[in-house]
Length: 284
Image (cartoon, rainbow, N blue to C red; front, side, top):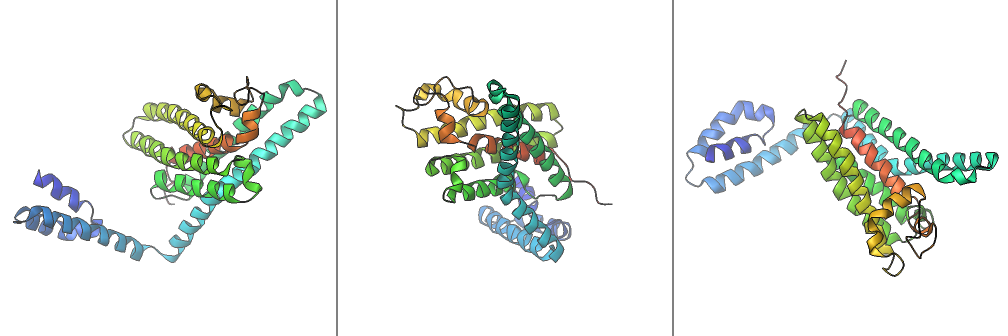
């Protein structure tokens, strides 16, 4: 048992330190009279050395690249929203020109699908050209920060839901769930279980987005307006304009409240999965 703990603690050190002093540290820990305390102290020192080593070895160019990547991630939800609005406007204009207003729900769904495909491509491209450390954590956190920033802007934030508390609660829930989803998919891919990774990403994304939509409705709308037994239908309705009267018993009342929050978070989820599923290109 102690040998396993020693190996785990040594793994915390940077490679250079571990290769040079690993055997000596392991021997000292193996013969220690106070193993628990010494293991804890060694782990603390290892983490400190790892953080110090990473900071010292990061060049100015790498720091600038990391900062630029982080800024792009924070701004991404705004870009997703602009893209979606452009596609929805185009679909609306086409419906007006052709008089096919009954096909509006299909145009809405097509616009969301095209926007999601674009974010998938963007995520894969970013992951291959700008490697992101701990992407399963950094990407959801940065995207959630950007979405929360949009929600906090007066009037503009209404595009992500007319009740700000509901929008922020949904974004926070999404960040936590997306982190778990991204981590699970990345682990499966590292183990070579691609089929399981794709299946998990699809099912997990749908469950996450369904839960996030429910969080908004639970927070923003009272039960008498949005009966809770309709919860499994809220995400589907908000993404398709299929609405049998889920809120106030009236058509599209749910969409009037939640607005673009589900589509934007859907695009963020697809973007995250695109990043997670991609590998950086090897340096030339």
